[in-house]
Amino acid sequence: MASTRAAIRYAKAILDLANSKGVAEAVNNDMKAIASTIESNLELSTFIQNPTTKVEVKESALLEVFADVNGVTKGLFHLLFENKRFEILEAIALEYKKLFDESNGVEVAKVTTAIPMDAALKAKVLAKVATLSDKKITIENIVDPAIIGGFILRIGDQQYNASVANRLQVLKRELSN
Image (cartoon, rainbow, N blue to C red):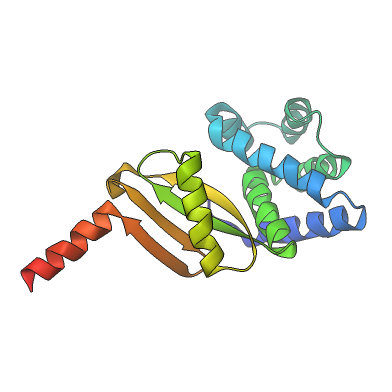
């Protein structure tokens, strides 16, 4: 989902408010839950995006689905209700998580693997990450069978490609020279 300038502005404002109330981490947990729930639930996603559904209905549905969220998060729902902008909720949640991590010196390492990561591979990746970054790292696993095996690690603008597909490509180039 593309980040919109509006989503970035909302996320910054919510983070500022959450920081001032000392609940930034609680709101970050809300945002993680909101983003993953919307992403994994097509029905909810379609409902939020639907322009014909009344904003009152969207707000009350979100307050029901996410009943346990922090007051700041509920405030965001109300703000989106007032501004009729529920369609950018997922983008706001994702943007908030990014800003929260940045403000806490946490960097996200995107690790692409052919199958979901196990504990051993996670440990191997974290060891490699320690050589590339001095920040706190959280790992986001992306599964792509096309890499065949191994992993591709991306932190910021750095990439370390230890995939079988990449090794085959290198071998192919060497053989054709």
